[in-house]
Length: 128
Image 1: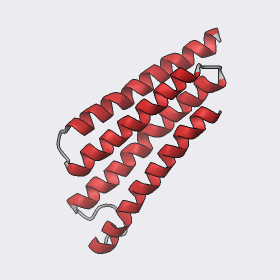
Image 2: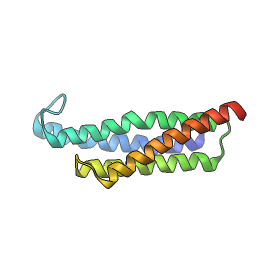
Image 3: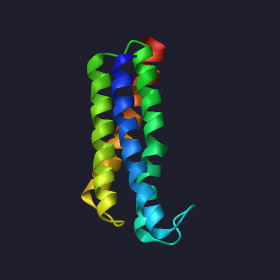
Image 4: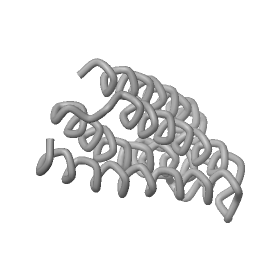
């Protein structure tokens, strides 16, 4: 599954980058577990966690589509939308805990990938 592998690799790098942003905050705030009530640390942890919560299912759906012969345009469309959505969400949440364009657009793109990927996976499983 070479197409899904490309997007899984991009997401993996993003996961590591976001995790690496947490370490200096933990050290400077002397917080080993949780967020210690620190707003910046809480936001960094949630930014990372949100990616880890949503990306795996999207990648599983992409893999299911690719395994069942989904067209490359569909897979690349899902992959690009997933990466764009997650990057927008990261940018939005990194700047503010409140509502922002990045968070809203990133969430909408991610949910669209999940729904489109789910529909495509079922379609391909039944009709491919």
